[in-house]
Amino acid sequence: MCQNCATASAVPRRDLLRRAVLGGAAAGVAAVGLSPAAAGAAAPAPAPEKIGSGRAAGVSMRWLGVSGWEIAFDGRVLYFDPYLSRFDYRLPGGPLAVDPAVADRLLATGRLAGPPELIMISHGHWDHMADVPSLLSRPDWAGATIRTISTETHRHLMHAMGMTDAQRKNNIVATGGEDLEFGGGAYRVQVIRSLHSQSLGYGFFAPGTRVAPPPAPASINDLVEGGTLAYQVTVRDRLKILMFGGTNFVERELAGMRPDVVAVSMTDSSSLHRYLERLLTVLGGPRYVIPVHHDDMVTGFDDPNLRDTVDAGAVRRVKDAVRALGLRTEVIEAEHLRPLLF
Image 1 (cartoon, rainbow, N blue to C red):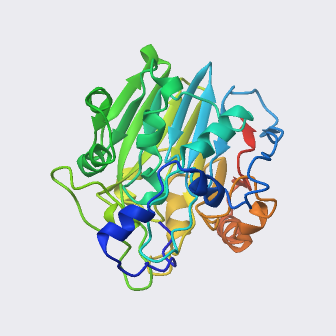
Image 2 (cartoon, rainbow, N blue to C red):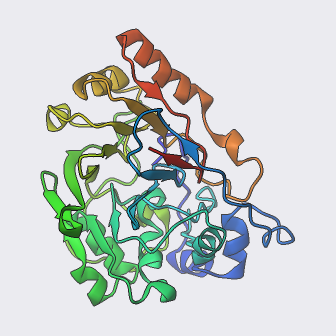
């Protein structure tokens, strides 16, 4: 979660429940940041961007905003932290306003592929996990097997948000260190113990764990961090992609890893010692680095001002770190929903 986000003041739980819009028409308008008159006008799919000049790996990465990704290759689709609703968390009480209609529009306009066969969750905050139960329950994906990877806390939170028994059977509880193969060896997923971002006060929003399903969450405050994981996806011998959901990491857990592509979270790192320099060094100077988690998290995908919500300073800081370390790393400035073709 963004470390500079203001935590909404508490209001009675019955009011939160009444204001939590789960798929209603009002949330559909608010979630994409449009006026009611413009809500039906969806933007076309952006043209893909080819990355690199060498032999193509045949892998597409599409930034879903915040730290989220869609990875597609060989007819397979994977999601990481797919937060799509982009509701206004700043409203009093921070009510959850998950809107399945946002995914409907993205899929209908070719700006999202699905169903995914795997969803990887970094941690339990709303801007990383809130949409996952809704995605798992899409009626048109009812026949698909969608596996999820999460911590025990995330599993309990998703249970409280409506995850079914069948969906729980497809949930893989991880703690970091798991090295998993999928699709008969088509790809490998390494689950890495990681850390949440820490701001100037050395803390972060909504810490905590759950050892059993809580009451149904109604506020962003109910979705606790519950442990943070990073993931490296290896598509056979073609491409290694490392993704972080928090602006922090455990250095010893990354020792010896040499990803081709690293999605680096860029929320506040002011309390950390040489965050970017240590990360880029321990990874051996990756070929590509993509700064993420530097948008405002609320502007909708159909809003023409969406591109202006990205923090250009975050991208500049990554480029400065690469230059200071003398690396040949290429810094890629991702655009919401534009496929990057590797």
